[in-house]
Image 1: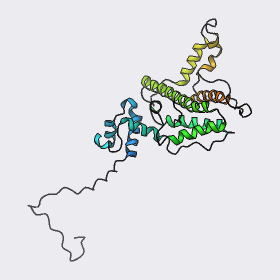
Image 2 (image 1 turned 180 degrees about the vertical axis):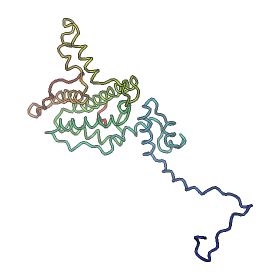
Image 3 (image 1 turned 90 degrees about the horizontal axis):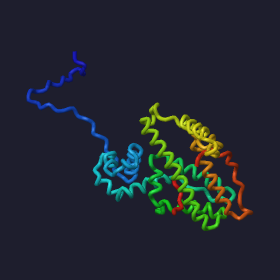
Image 4 (image 1 turned 90 degrees about the vertical axis):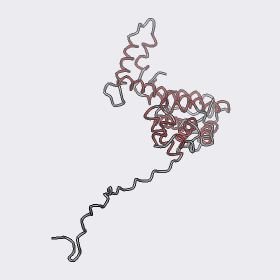
Length: 277
């Protein structure tokens, strides 16, 4: 018995000459239009996967599923793309209003944040060191950092160099971190490999090596063996930053020089003016 309502005829079977039609498929979702922001995001994806040496316009185009020529409507060259990626690190980041009583604390916060942002993507320290950041997007950040130093009372010559010193320190420190990380990956496989060298074991081995050197030839290495190597990059970064800040503070007029907090025992080994993140 048919389930159709009474009096409603059933549909006839297909005729022998009716052409078979494929089942209707839903329309594919419309692709988001290409934009500068999408190009930069794709470039970060390629950078994190393949590193700076593997980043190319062709790879970015492949990531987006477009032709290379389509990218040039949004970026003029690979160098232009790298500058845009560097500037992206500054989005949503700004220094506070300069406070001469807290200038060292403000610089510490800035430097720690800059290091964190550079580490958020692979090889960003290399990109940072390769490009002068005096672009329209970054000049306000340069101005803000210089304001912190000048408002604190640093002489103009020292204030002009201080930003470069801080930025170079951050870039160099992050670059070293990235090099050691890449070396560990090469030796032990991917980041999740259990064969990766253990930094705690490496630190213990180096400390033991220094401690067993001939005392007559290496008295200072032996004496400082327990302090020369640490598995805490945060501690190493902070004490290096503290050394720089205390040096800058020595240029302040004596009546204005604030007392720097105690950096604690040493825990590690050891022209542009701009923030690095």
